[in-house]
Image (cartoon, rainbow, N blue to C red; front, side, top):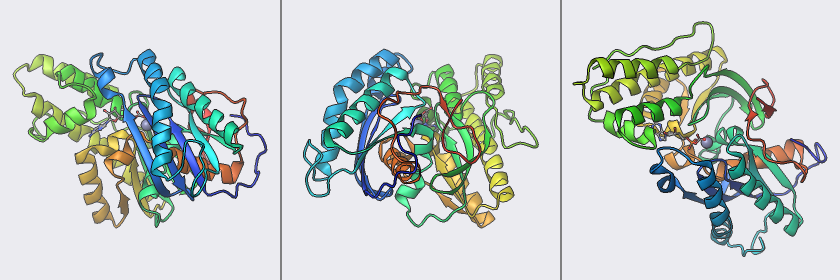
Length: 355
Ligand code: KG4
Ligand code: ZN
């Protein structure tokens, strides 16, 4: 991603951010990187539910229709008019540049650049995964570092050590399926619906987590994860035992996923001498993961930050926060930079890289 003048000091406070990487059209106004002034999220989940997953063309078209109304609503809720003016004008415009669906990303990136040009303020491109890391900071500005962040979403499963805003080291990642992808696939197989995470979470409330002993991939000596074997084990078990209840399978599957996630996260926190632990990404909305993380944190003397469910799933406030800190450390992004659908989060100690 191009930087027009690396290190150019950004002295502004107020960032408008746009997020359109997948199936939510979102805009937010955030001050000083952590004070959420307004945050609007328009979900397309109903549009995609009938197809059992996100349809890229449908997502791009919906973003195109929704982006201006969503931005206008976020500006109005911050006391600003459609020109970004009013009490406390916007100092910079951020947008998610990747990873995500290319057609969807381009809607937000093009709109953000247009606003930035029209208003004569800097544009900053943000890595969607980096955005998720800021969820806890937005809800708890007293956050003490270093923390270990477990970032679990539909497309990614990462363990990141965060030494402060903009200072990251990737400790581990999934070797195959993302945690959210495993929830979505198992839910579809069990006929529980889409999106799968909330459906399994709900079904599991009525099931027995010890009903089926599903395998936990341990990958010793690493902080990596693997979920594809678990997904296959669920399919094989249900085929061999058609009489088993979906609730018991959902609860046992959820227990296996949360066991694997929490074991590595707490090991990583101990090994890197973190003082706290944050959950982030859509799967961090999972009730069992939240409950057990809090319990284990208390037992281990670690502060556990559990962002609200709305902050865990995709939103633009987290993009504004990441954009603010990026502007301060690296300066604006060149206006000729495009969307980066396969942007990764690879290099230890750095924020952005291609996968
Ligand atoms: O972060 P996110 O909103 O979008 C991506 O960037 O992927 O995450 C979406 C993922 C989906 O796989 C969804 O099934 C999962 O988060 N999810 C959950 C729950 N709520 C959403 N997974 C488990 N339990 C939940 N309650
Ligand atoms: Zn996400």
